[in-house]
Image 1 (cartoon, rainbow, N blue to C red):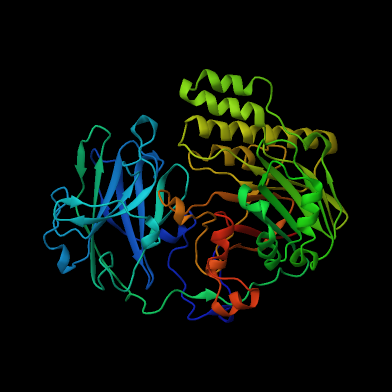
Image 2: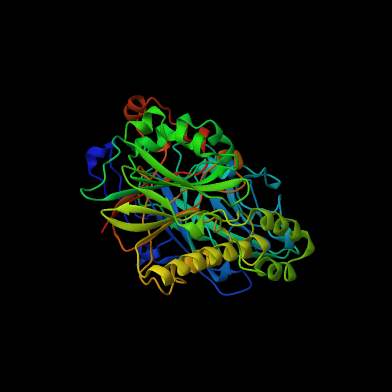
Length: 500
């Protein structure tokens, strides 16, 4: 869903990007590839587009891959005509300025798989140090396994990693785990826009929900930092939610400590709050809260557990190195909870969740995510069997960095609930669906880890909230800085406006 806010919402020129970085490739229809190839490399096609702020690439692979966890690594070598790169040769490609590494091999995972992304400057001896993808605002979507990805790279006004105003040459090089090198043909791309002379625009107003809409805010509050939650309250209050779904709440949270949280001035000013705390999940719990509405726990979903034998079956197909993770999960059980919230006189089920992090498609973490989603689905189905039909919202940190199977389990696997949809939400000041970013964990680039699923509603708006996207004027009004959000959590707030 494109985010077309009125120009008055922006502090500065409103630049509509040609590509919305959301994993929906309809933006690329009609864009001719700059490279098509057959051969040993897993990459078969590259397309390109640009704006004053970004260079965009579409990468198509022969088979589905985890872009940040492939066996081997993919280098994209960039030649932009900088004089300083005239003597830089990499894998036989001349005049290389820098490379983008996908599945970087300096911190490989099990099975000789790479891990994450990096920017690497070219030198006279080849590729240099691994540098943060945040230096060039590098993002790729989707975050999970796929055959096609779209990515963006910032166009800085100056610097050794900058782009020319005319021609960029891209050469893909794939290196297998046993060091076999596949060099693709060089693909030239002529830029159609001039690099922006001003920074990208920032948002000047956080818009209100449409009349009659229910505003749902989902947030991974980052466990440890939530022990001192004063700024969490102010950030949540800034988006004026009606229902709040929290995950990664620390294990020792009590009804009294949560009551004090919702009684902090910023949230208290919005009205009285009720809430339900999950009783399972180990050190990370889930919470449903609502203001000016009745909230009560779904009795059978306060403490949610795996089906008998589910973890034992996973242990049988998991190498011994992964058994410790299964043991931890056996003790923790499901980090989720179910609650009924009164919405205009009708019970709506809200289910926050926090699924297993890390890994790649088919490994133990990915399989755990699927088991967790299956367990949550079984609890929802049991309630449907008893009560019949009801509206539903499922939201949280899906952590789908391997396969999308855990998402599909709840999206299309609820056969008794046809029409479950994924909320479409983009950041306020950029056309991307990024919900997680951490310059401190820069081995992995920003991604879409947090999702909101809903049924029985229509979506009438939504956005992803972070102080990084706010104008100086709005930051001053909120008494925050652009870095405030990053100091509180690495997950952003996902806001969805729903109407019946």
